[in-house]
Length: 486
Image 1: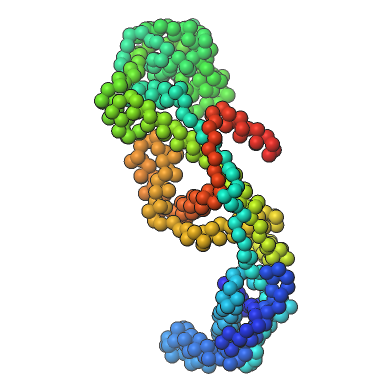
Image 2: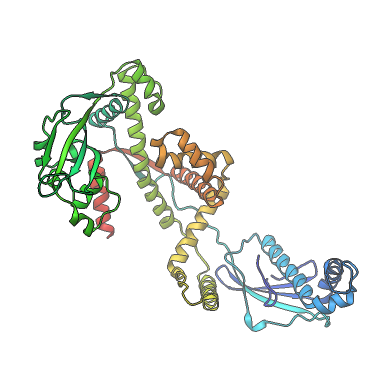
């Protein structure tokens, strides 16, 4: 609980063990608790503490376990007594809250004016007073009558055709041909020339490649229907390829480092020799092709089954995007519609105390050359985040939400697959096996599992209506709402 002595600990007008506890209401969910601890409450515990210390403490001239209790008491008595009183105060607070079916909100705020010295040589009573904030009771502010829209974007035939084309190219064959067409890849050797049209001494010479999409209109004209073994001089290489001069230097001339000085020194004239031309032959829709794509879309014995699998995959992906919008709407609504009467006076005091403590710590730790830490979040933001936390914990408790090890690992796989899935399942597993050793990563996946379950519960509280929409319509809707928010 983190209560320190001094200053004191916390709260109620009940006698838990022999402690005298008085509580006084200071407002909504805000109370002052005063705890009085008599010598009878702490003497026996203090004696046991000194006895234990005598067995453990190491003092020069004495064997461990044989240090006289009187010496231990003289050296460590005040701290030992403070520790025991602190335990008593914390236990009193816990029992006080439990007996009154309350939970604490934030931390107790000690009344600084009541600080007092702990003196083990003086058997006396100690009194500690605290302000305490209590967690409010509330109900989630959503019901079945609340209606939300889940936009569903169906896969178009064009989407499916494009994916079919991609798959056929991916699993197709590459063949060398004698003459280039638009989609072919042309492999060339480029030799930088001097002003006389001869090979430039220490000039650039590189094996490179391109397709028609990298060419400007002038470039497409120059290389139209080019044949293998073609050889010719180019007056201005940079005019034939798209992009800035630096981009052409990197993408076509294969240069790793470029700057203005290097670019200025490059001659625009190059000799170009076509070494080979490669054409991608799209895969036929046969058994071999359907077996190859099974790793991406599952088993399909013909084109119709594969197109249906592609449709489902596209629509599942679209659903994941639009569900994000739905979940965002639900989250905003549950926060806005759930009424929670917070003990604002107490929370304001607690917030200010923590802010001042943080600033004081920063001033003490700040050294020359260190960057200043971020400022604490403003009070309204702190209050909103606290409300969100209370809502989440209520749903978590009432629905018994927890994350199993298997769920955490599966979430890690899904999360990693969304970023690296195109590199294959083996690579995804490799990334997960490494990341799962990182405690921060595991905690993040744990939180994602719980957030997903939280949203599942919230969706079950309301009515969700599906509405079909095109991708373009959905994008326009997003833009309009983004403009309104700005």
